[in-house]
Length: 172
Image (cartoon, rainbow, N blue to C red; front, side, top):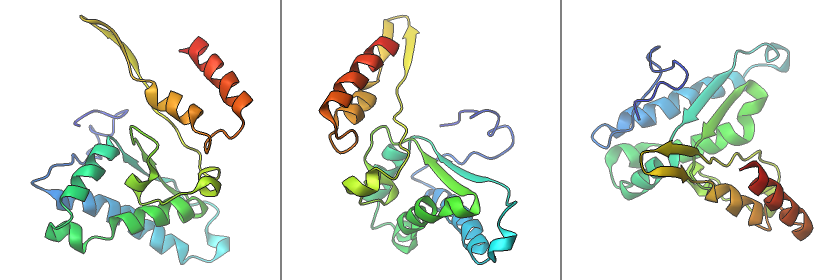
């Protein structure tokens, strides 16, 4: 989308996913990975004051689905975007390089992750929900949060799930 994202569009820092120019999206991911790759070659004493690099992947789940459908496209076939994203997710924090993905679900395969119960516990996952009012009334899409809380891999203890769901309903 051509949203501002807190002024990033105005600074020329937004790349809109367009199926007629897939390479642009893949280039952005690769550019951030290249920064990560250069930084990981640094000795430990040179890593302490690295400026933050953040790759924000808005509406990533839908883009991921499109890229999956376009997997035979030459640019997608030549790209290592999922491998690069996994590398950033798992190792980038040590070099102040991170990615944030709006997945509209907690399907980690959209960022190349094949996570199990143990690895899920090591990630800080943010479930997105929204609430807005328009001419037709109130709209909300907090289902992903409810699903995350209800998932026994995310919250193993049933009593804790019940308590969190109750608190979530009050907050909502």
